[in-house]
Length: 445
Image (cartoon, rainbow, N blue to C red; front, side, top):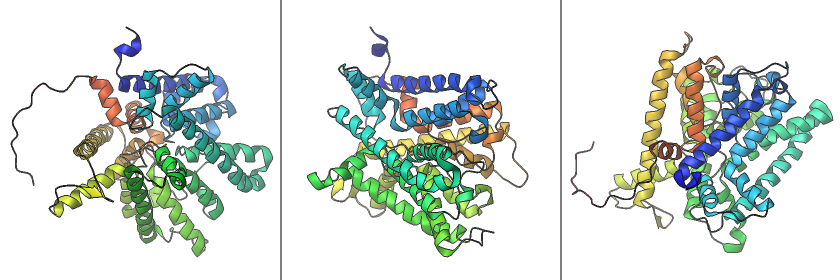
């Protein structure tokens, strides 16, 4: 029996991501990867490789100052692989080598891209690649318009390529000292970046439905729920940030339009993109709490984003509303959600709550909290790591050895999927039980 026959599909998927991270770690630890020409600490290289592959953007070293051109290229490649899913590249390798894509690879790609069936795996993979390249190429051109006058031809191209890939993959890596704070008064750049972020976090299957709508005149329930929840969250986020952070503190030099665009940028980025134009330690406590909610929700399944996903939140909200109204079924736009959908959503939220609680508890013991902060100093970064967002209140650059390992694990689970990781650890391949126990109700609430 081959090794693929001995391992479950979640285990192969998990090991695949781990392999990419380890290769990235080795490359980033090489002297050629740092600007100083010295070897980078293996733990720091591992943390950066994990952050890049899991498209998080958290760093323990300054990306712009520490890494050489080679190191930055390695980070970009890891971001691209992590954003699109390594199984997408595996299928492309099969195609270019003119070999038939076997059943195991199709199943893995199906799970990696959150496909319901694997009958059209090859066509979906090609759609994902073509769409991604087209959007990122367009992003490079639009960003170059802004970066060229500022930084010249060579740096302008480099900055455009790096930030287009980073924004589309929702990675949050940047080549500036303080993220995008210097671009607060540049609505054009911020708008282009938000378009790239939204394009990457909507989900490839949503894009497939949108692009084929003129031909099929059909949108799946998944697409309808994802678009409704996604756009609703942007609208709610804009209003909340306008109320809590609308004046942007001391930035009185910004005009009304710039402040509105900055608020819109803040409404889009916390849901896994990781860029910021205003230091998060300086925002209000209400804004900080709301940002944690957005980071936890994340983007759409089958996208470059992390978090528990918009559809999970949408399903649970609809189920709660139906229950409060005494309805038996949770329905949306003429369709009924299955009990399996609702059960998986509830299980996901519970597992994430337990994992984040345990991580926060351990970090409260191992990490130091500044006097002017409370537990939010740790909880904010914990949620950011799992949501693959990359925002920080200042904890991440000062993590201890144990802290870095915990954050790496959180980023990995946030990108690969907590179900996939749990199935891999528990080796869940057992068939259904041959019998079922009698039912009995217990009191709730």
